[in-house]
Length: 311
View (cartoon, rainbow, N blue to C red):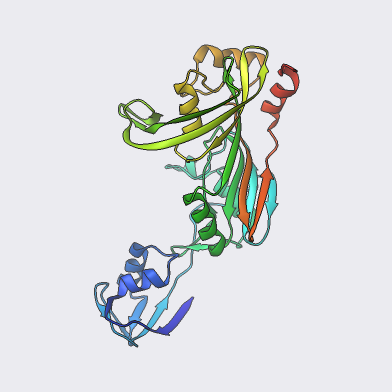
């Protein structure tokens, strides 16, 4: 991909800053990498990244398209909606959203499945064609997740999430009988000071505000509660940590849950992961508000169908 153009600026400007503004899909560090690799010329000559371009200079830039170092895998994705710009799927549990370090971590992730499903129909991000998953779900959390297939959609979804304009609703089964019909949990949350793998509301490192709204749907066998939850913020493990902080941890949650209860629900319900599902997404799509529903996966649906207490 080659671009040739003249600068339209009123005063001199560093070439790396000018190009990173012009090509906003690329990071400044990636622009600097291209300059160092002599993929950028000014008036026909290679330049240093700190040189200043002048008004009406001629710039040529060569963008090398690389392939992502992850193999496509046919995962038979549960597609909720798809068009040329966006893919929304109902993620299965036990699947990582993104690859993790190590050889094993590069296989059977959501990225592998999307690469197979989308083939070459993917946005170019920092010179690499790859799926842009604009938010994430924990490995053992199932449900709706959005993937941008174009640069324009990627920017739109990022802005909506940043501006808190995407409605995200979850269903969770928690330990105990929740008495309040509706409630809100608001607290600071981030890394546990003594365990980097956990999040906490108690003296978190670099705390960030987190807000979760909950609504009681029904009871399960008079021991557990089915809740519908809406998050205003998208902190790591937010729902799991918030519910555990008010003594209603999600059943099956191996990090924040109750070990005795987890063993009990594994035997009674055949549930072997946290009972948390991203049920509904609401967002603006092509200037219209759209709602997408991700039906419960079979393990949670079995509990609701067979153990729910009817009013």
